[in-house]
Image 1 (cartoon, rainbow over the protein chains, first blue to last red):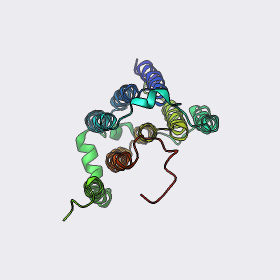
Image 2: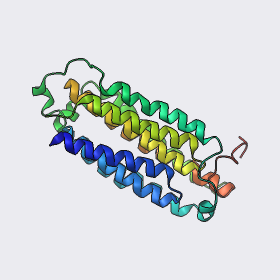
Image 3: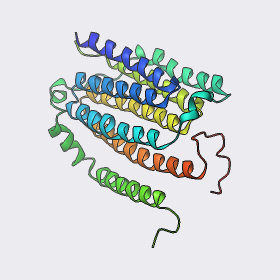
Length: 167
Length: 101
């Protein structure tokens, strides 16, 4: 049952990712990306990562995707439909992407190191488990990430300020 | 019956390949950012899958950091895109061949 659900969601996510990178209309690409994000959140739920599934839906599908849609509407991409979608070197890019995707054939039947204890894995995806990891071994990276987000905020404000309007 | 970790790594590799193709082939800067998001999601899938396989919650912490970095990248990248669009309309990367603004 779980495995069947996984393969269904995996199929839909691969299909929607392909459509997202090949559609001509940027808004259609964004909507296929939304389908991909929701499928990935579903796979997170199947893997017992409830907290990450919620973050995936709220941050990715909620915040980042809406931000992208806003930018699509701010940019005037009306003539986008008449231009070629891909750069002239796209077959080379297809070879690179295909080579990377071919790794799937190698890892699918690979033998990985034995699984850890299942008892510890049972509650690891809960906010409690994530919090113990974030504020235990990952305390310094956590603070660095908060600094990174601050830098991104300041950088976005500096970028969008028009010349001459600053003090 | 739980999901085999090999299948999860395979899905991650396929999604990463699709994102790589999109990043290299698309002509529009906005769609290149979309491809980067696909690649980051593929990496997250792999991290969570191995976190589950090894029974170690640290993989999920790393996935959370990846999401934070993706948010920062979207903010800065799309800000740059809007500034570029103000100077020269259109979002094609082919005309971006000067460093001087």
